[in-house]
Image (cartoon, rainbow, N blue to C red):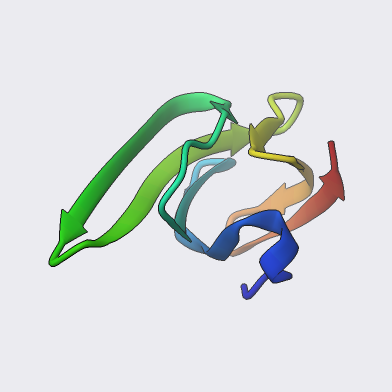
Length: 89
C-alpha cells in the first residue's frame, strides 16, 4: 500500500496473515518512527549516504498498532483476508 509522502512512510505491506494475526512490514526514508503493537521491530541502514528505515509489527482484533502518525487496527479478520483501517493519530 502506497502512502501520502506527508506520513514519512513509503509503503506498508502485509507480511503474513495467520490465525487471526496480521504481520505488517513498513519502509521509509531516514528518520525515527514511534512504533506500537505486538512484536514490533525497527531498523535503519545506510549505504553510500542513503539511509532507510524498515520495520514491522503485528496486529490482532482488539490489539491495534501505530507507525509514526498512523493508527492501524483490524476491523475484521478471516482465514484468507483482513480489513485494515488506517487513521491519523
